[in-house]
Image (cartoon, rainbow, N blue to C red; front, side, top):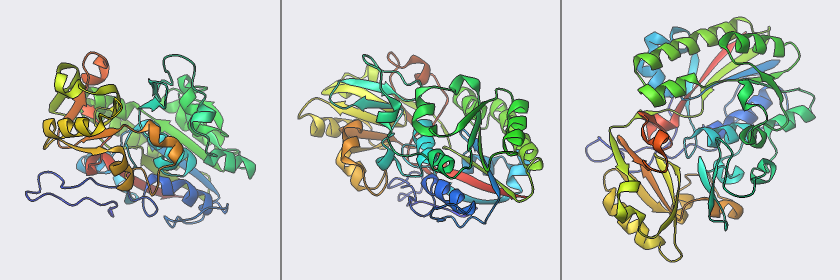
Length: 385
């Protein structure tokens, strides 16, 4: 696999000296949608150089990191036998952010989905983007993520894009925010999804199918565990079956929203009074924390968190994160308030948890969200018929 991103190593080689910055504009998830549109003969910049196709199927496997797949190639012989390259997910390397990136074809700084839990600016509350819940008034997904989606563009050209995924996700706020313009095809089992793709490709030139159980296995048991390997085998067989049913002239692309690491070191903010000083809300996720502070307290919080997490996390201000290109070439000014005044982005085997306010998330084994190679690198596998 070819490489993407920027990731120098530290003096010992054990930990990165700087974050692995996503390769926006050259080899990232943000570049994939327009490249696929272009391959279909529709307007779009084909940055990834995809070959023309009459129909395209995108198989999105939640949590299928490129390094994870390479480490267990024997469990996925079909996938690892295909033409492949490595691209970067984007920051944070979380599901809602990556889904929005794939759904719009623009980086997080443009679409504004910059974390799992984000501040609603000026309102003192957090939006949970996965569950699409927030205290107080509902948050309108069309307003929160207003960019035109790839599916709306496809629909405008008569492509009738289809999204094949579990029925429970149909009509949710996250689905509305990132998949506007597609025709939802509810399919819960593997067989239903494989059959759904085959049927949808008979009428549609663009079909996306989602599978999330690999990510779930990694969270609960760790990537590389027996449970995770069982799911990787399911993914491999699913990809082979989808490929076998492609109409002539079609292309199947397999990618992921992020990779994963297994955590061995947890810093619990709920048991650290020093990390609570000056902090009003804790957002993001355990590997990429948005830290929202009291007025005038940002620098003091940054210093405290930097000292407490030395050797475990990159701790920067909102402005530093934006200027470093973590969210893309620019961050729209409307979205700046969604980013923490301070960001704490864990590396190595560390997770920044909150055991009382996030008990389920704090008990996980596998995590993602950060700017490490294992979390950022995702495969782009291609099968043509």
